[in-house]
Amino acid sequence: MTRLSQNMTTKPTLLLALALAATASLQAADYSQWGGGNTRNMVSDEKGLPIDFDPGKKYGPKAAPKIAGRLRPDAQAANKGPGAEDIDLSTTKNCLWVAKLGSQTYGTPVIANGQVYVGTNNESPRNDKHAGDRGIVMVFDEYTGQFKWQLVSPKMGTGKVNDWEYLGICASPTIVGDKAYVPGNRCQIICMDVKGMSNGNQGMQDESTFMAPLDKDGKLTAPIAPGDTDADILWVYDMYKELGVFQHNATAGFPLVVDGKLFAPTCNGVDWTHTNIPAPNSPSFIMLNAEDGTLLGEQDHVSSERVLHCSWSSPNYLELGGKKQVIFAAGDGWVYSMAPETKKDAEDLDILVEHWRYDANPPEYRKNSAGEPIKYVEYDGPSEIIATPTVADGLIYVPIGQDPEHGEGVGCLSCIDPKMTGDITGKAVWTFKGIERSISTPAVKDGLVYAADYTGRLFCLDAKTGKEYWKFDTKGHIWASPLVADGKVWIGNEEGELFILAEGKELKELKTIEFPSPLLSSVVAANGAVYVTTHTHLYCFKEGAKAPEAK
Image (cartoon, rainbow, N blue to C red; front, side, top):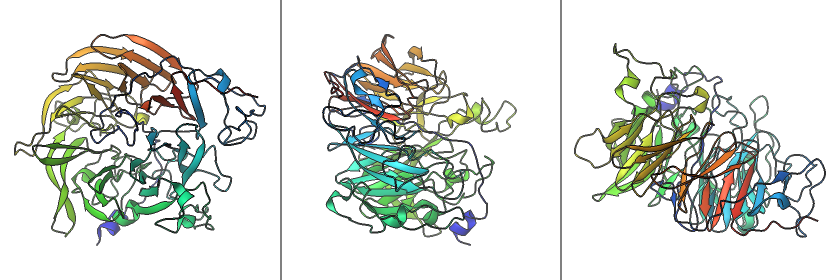
């Protein structure tokens, strides 16, 4: 029996909703991937960022006017339904532009070569030919907010346990040169031309079939011919079809591209019962050729065999002592270090060489005092890892956590020494159990760790010892990750509140700004601007920006 047929012996059903938050960090200038670089550390070199800004007010039912002689970016009136730009720019402050997204947005934006990319859903369609529930990546002009093109991906058709309704695409692309790599909503890794169709149709020539949805009987509908505002897809790697992966609820995890190789989680997980693993023989993590999308290697299926829920974390990369390490935090609650090279196993599969692994769950979260396993979703039970591990000053920082639908629970933040000592088990420098479940990626700067938990608290810890300097309660659940930029720490919460705190060992709140929708994605700083993404809108704020007068 093949691995694929083994994995198909259990049928799927429905389950809980997922949501991922993103995070942002970068160096000055562009922010071309999640975390700004391969270490995924949420620290920016940007200076002169505004903190006195206002998202403005929405228009009423009347038509939106032209702005400075031009229509709003999508050229629709505000009373014409989905897709209309509905923010009155004259009521904003230090706002360069604002763009309408879908109704649920979990992808933190990336900015590269004059374009802004963000994953969302299709509840505000940019094109009438793409109607209904879809995964979307929207692309805007960095300087004007003008909509340029979009990736449109219909639903899988296998039910919400695989592709939860209205989640859309839960990540944004990783931009390398003229290519954009993103996990679609259908358990696929998709490579696109960053210019869209403006320079012709390159690579794959079957976008029309890719964009065609399934009918109620699961049959493919008529192809939809691509237009000027559709994505130019170069290649697609389908993990569901090629590897027999059983995606749980959504595809997520920002791809990592190093030396022409792409690394990504497969999002292999449990079924609707939360106890059965339909595809234990499929990998949770893979390596592809970034040029053509061919499979180069995969992780041994150990993390799939013991996955608690799903693997949604994004990988990162470091080199120590001449050793290359790809770090992957898996759905079994373990952190794995692997080389970007493979060896054959007994089944002739190309398996990524493992350096070490580390259990990020304290033993008392796995088993009680009687030695009995604690159930997964219990408040005091074990968690997977959804946050991205952060590499800083030769150490790795990673918290454990669960799908926010599971609620609050015990957590742990580990500081791991990635040096290879010949022992396959990684070593923790320290652990901090004062934090609860978290899906937020930590930021590390000047010997301090800034980490948030789902409960709604932001912590400042000593990066070498784990000593707590302060904690700040936002009084709202946190999905996003903290950004450290311009001497400040930026974090938003589910209540739509953006908190700006002073960087350093002393707690000082500088500003709180209220937005009309949840802030589940992280703040991004790039090229002197601050990007704030709500569930429904993407804002670009810049010091001294003046809203064009409406007329």
